[in-house]
Length: 211
Length: 300
Ligand code: SF4
Image (cartoon, chains in turn cyan, yellow):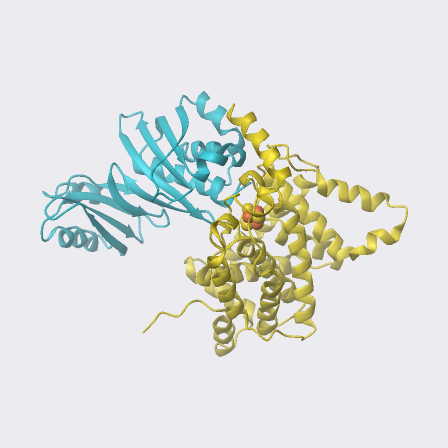
C-alpha cells in the first residue's frame, strides 16, 4: 500500500474503489463529505488523494496516489471535499460520496474506514446496508413480500453461485427491503438480468470485491 | 458449541499432528485459504519483501513527510554511524540492532512521505519488520528464501492477533499496532534462527509483556510523531524478546493469552488515547502549538 495510514489512506482508497463499484462506472463528478477524524486530518494523511484514487479505480498500492488529485482532474473528474457532520452515530472515519457517472448513473454512498485498512459501506441511496468489499456482492432492493429471498437464492443456486453471507435490511413490513448477498463467485451479467426480471425486485447492483 | 478463535497454540499443535515442519504447515494453510498453491504464496510473500526493501531504500534517501514535521532521521543516523570518530558510540546498539533501528526509521519515514510500503500489520507500524529482516540479511547473512518464510510466519502471527484482538490503533492503542508489529517480527526472528513453534509463541508473548498499554497519541493525527520512533523502539523490543525466547527462557503467559490481555487493555483505554489525537503526546503544549499552525496552513 501507499502510506501513511492504513485507515486514512489505504482504507480510504478501498472506500473509493467500493463506491465506484457500487456506482457501476467511473464517476465523472464526486461530491465528498468528510466526517470526524477524516474531516480533521484528511490532508495530512492523503485521505483526499486516496479517495479519489479509489474512485479512479486504482489500488491502494498504486504509486500514482500522491498525485491523484491532479491526475483525476486531468482525466476530467470533477470533485469537491467538504468537512461535515454525518451524525453522532457515524464512525469517526466516515465519508459520504455523492457520485454521478458518465453514463448518468447517480448514487449516494456512506461508508467508513473501520481500522487496519478494513472498510464498511453502511448506506447506499438511503438504504441501510453492510458491504465490506471482501467478496463479490449483490445489492438488491426489493418489495418486502414472502418468497423473494427464496426466488433470488434459487436462481443463484442454479448458476452454481455459492452464497457466503446474506443479510436483509428492511425499512418496515411490506416496504422496501434490501438484500446484501456476498458470493464466492462473481455474478455474470445474464444472472443479474434474470434477477432484475423478478417482479418484486427493484434493482440489482453487482459490486465486485476490492483488493 | 462456541466457535474457537484462531490460536497460535492450535496452529502449532495442528502442525505436529500432521507431522509437518511448522513452516510447511503454515504454507499449506495459507495456500488453501486463498485457493492457490504454495509457490504462489511464496511468490506473493517475496514481492512483499521486495516492497519493504524499496521502502527502506526510499527512506534512506532522507525523505521529508508531506507535513514537513518529520523525515531524514534514518539518513542522519547512517551519517553518524559512518562518521563517528569514536567507534564505541556506534556499538551502543551493536550492528544487528543498530541497522534494524536505522532501517525501521527509514521505512517508517517512507510511509510518512506517502511512499509504497507493506502494512505490517498497519501502515503506522510498517517499519518494524523491514528493519529487522533487512538487518538480518545484511548482518547475519540470512538468505532471502529464509526471510520470505520468516515473513510468512510473521503474517500468520498477525492473523492470529487480528483474529483474537485488533491491530488498529483506533481500537487498541499503539500496543495493537507497533506491539503487534514487534510481536510478528519477533516470531520471524525466532523462526530464522531455528526456534520451534513454542519459542515463536514465547517471543510474541514477551513482546506484549513489554509493550502492553502503549497508547496511540499521534500529533495532529498524523502518522509521524511519535509513530516513527516507536517503530525504532519496537525493533528493540522485538530483538530482546527473540533473544530470550531462543535462549529457552520462555514465557509464563502463553502467546494467545498475552494477545487476549492486549485486547482487553486496548478496549479499556480511554478514547483520547486511541488515535483521536486528544491525549498523550498529541496534547502537549509543543504538539498543540504545531497542530494549530499546521491546520491553519492547510485549511486556510
Ligand atoms: S501512535 Fe497510533 S498512529 Fe502512531 S503508530 Fe502507534 S498506533 Fe499507529
